[in-house]
Length: 454
Ligand SMILES: C[S@@+](CC[C@H](N)C(=O)[O-])C[C@H]1O[C@@H](n2cnc3c(N)ncnc32)[C@H](O)[C@@H]1O
Image (tube, rainbow, N blue to C red; front, side, top):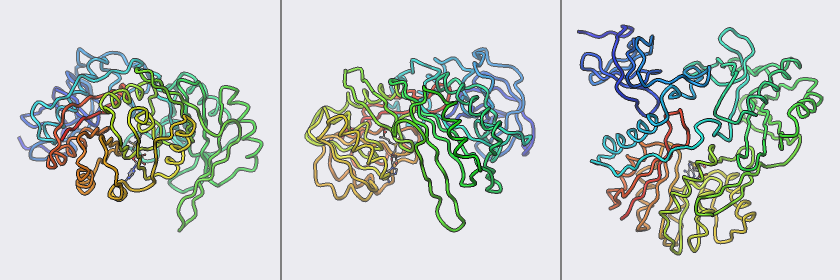
């Protein structure tokens, strides 16, 4: 039968795929569909038809999978965050392991890749230490504060509950919502560049209990700004240890500038990390700095990395961010060299080294692809933790020139990890083990620690 775009088809979903979609078969053709879980019988409208596969938009759940459980959140399936909330956690873990196996088999060209069972997250809810909520309007142009709806450029979901950050966050959200409505401060409209409120960023120290709030706005400043910020500071209460106002200044023809002002409290947020082997570090996190969003699970991730380090004179921490991996490694090797593009992240990394009295580590600001060629040291281990896009062939060739016996590749994207491992294989590196760690329950995301040996 000739298939057409817009045609409604009915089929049973077989599995989940990395990226959050599900896959099933219709008349011998593989079909990717959103919002469905394995075992569901669904109807869906075809949006793309290719020779080997098709894509479809979910229309109706005809028969739910017997595995489905009731979602905890009223926004599950709408806000775009927890796509797997209606799947039992064990099944989520099985699916995530399969994403990694599939990537290594299909993209990495490995048969029976050495992928271990996923390290589960003990707290399946309230695990995030940061969240950003946008101010805007819902589809009916009513004030809204929450998430950008998936696939809709401007529409915001007015968030009533969220079970990923701590319970305090939702309470803070409703306090801020009430405040801006009373003050009649308007959300910034991306469509025309007018309005004041852009977003509310909440960061929490899971081990320290500290809370940082950043109210981000445009430079279209209301007359009652000072009075308003003072009132908001009161409303946020004592639990909030840092309150920032961040102004995004955009002028036609010049690059966007961000001006941050500390309204009250501490400059940074303190978070501690304690690994299972007893190693402990304390971090000061600036508002813009990257920090792993799930503190307790990041401790497990770092512990897995450390198990593979095995001492040595030099270790490289490439794409080091605020230096967390390198700082933990510093206790176990002679000296660590970290490279990171983001200057402010490196400034924080240096501060964190000082604060933890770690002196056998140096951080360099720059592009790994360029800077790595200038390092003269011979590392016994190289840790790589690049962004989702992974590495490029040139950087891989340069990394290989160090002739280092062990590479620990940390990745949040199984597809680019598998591709890069195949490139590394051309330089004699073999995948010894892949340990997936679930940093984000109810989402499709999966972090991996991969050991490659020459
Ligand atoms: C996944 S994060 C790693 C964070 C860090 N390892 C940690 O655990 O906190 C990737 C980092 O790579 C940095 N980055 C991106 N491209 C880069 C490049 N070409 N050279 C150096 N660093 C880069 C980003 O700024 C980001 O901090």
